[in-house]
Length: 52
Image 1 (cartoon, one colour):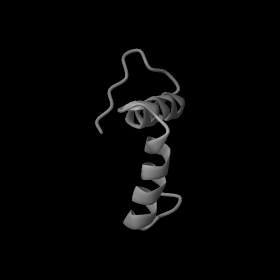
Image 2: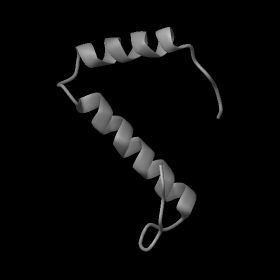
Image 3: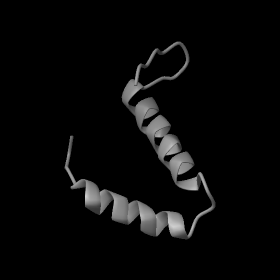
């Protein structure tokens, strides 16, 4: 892990972002970013198995 943030800081940042987005958009962005990062770490996607 590169850095750790207190829960209250994370929730405040999320609340600020969610205020200007449609419902579910922040989670969709996070899921997309996670999938891109995992694909980069794996080097390939087809046939790969990942457990989160």
